[in-house]
View (cartoon, rainbow, N blue to C red):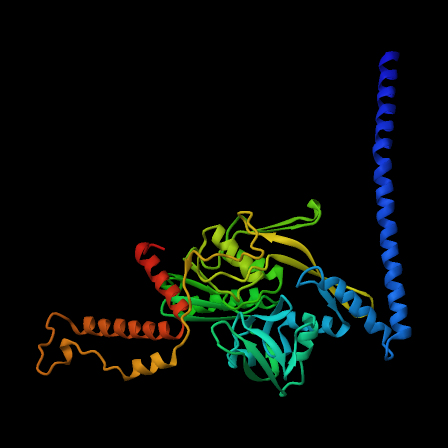
Length: 444
């Protein structure tokens, strides 16, 4: 017994020696790293003092420190940054759904300000801004070299004031100017309507009102159509939706799922990961769902599209989404400021990251650009004629009055659908898709 104890002790001592031998260089390396960090901080202090003492003009020390903090954060990725007390207050207002501005969501790409998406029914939307546009100048002043927050600050101003922005657009030969009148932006998170027997759910942003608006909107449209049996499906329109709150993306996904993972987030440390699962209850009551996306669909929009696509709960139609697959945490700081820090990547239920890739639609449908010349030619074209237009043509004696009325109603619906196809080809395609699904499976 004594031999066993001694052997165990000897083993423990040997382990301790081995551990010490390995830990020694590691501790030295850690100490060297700490020393280097302190040297860099001393260097920062030296530069700060020299600027204060020797810069050609007197500087505000607080502005210098804020700029240094912002530079440190923006060097990480385009979505991290420092929020001054005013910016932090503005951000809190935006998540509640009302703020002043132009109505565009922007990001920064290789030093240029890029439009992620215009927001529905805002000055930028009315002025014709498009997803993918680059903004190079504001009131003639170049934005190149500015941080994203500085560029956004240039675009802010009093409600009712005019701003001239210079835009570079793919397909346009030259940059062009756009005049926009700033206004108070009131975000209606979800707009619902019916197109025939299809319920269209237009989700413009993910703020505190998104899921409540969606839930009440679905119930209202089902009631207006006379019950779920008269609904052939739902179209969730996430085009040009720049995203917003992760919690709302999870709730919207859950609205159409009964079970299964919605999204997982993985941070730097494995223990910081999180998984979010659906709960029982499908607001669409099993009816087919089509999700519309495009290059302006980002972040929270991509979480919803990816979750419904992976669970095969919806057919995703449109074009490749934006590809923002990271999660930002807003951390309050002393003095009422905050920092927005990228803390995790998110993954769809199948384990894929959409970072820099986006969600690929199941069916790619481009939105044709309007061609004024082609529209003018179409208006000048002679209308086609049919047998019924010929003088003295025979009547159809096989139809009852009710059948004739039904044919006329169907024709009116077809003409309405054709008009929608001209106005919004992607939406018209989604509606046709729902009709096809119902024709194949009328029991739904």
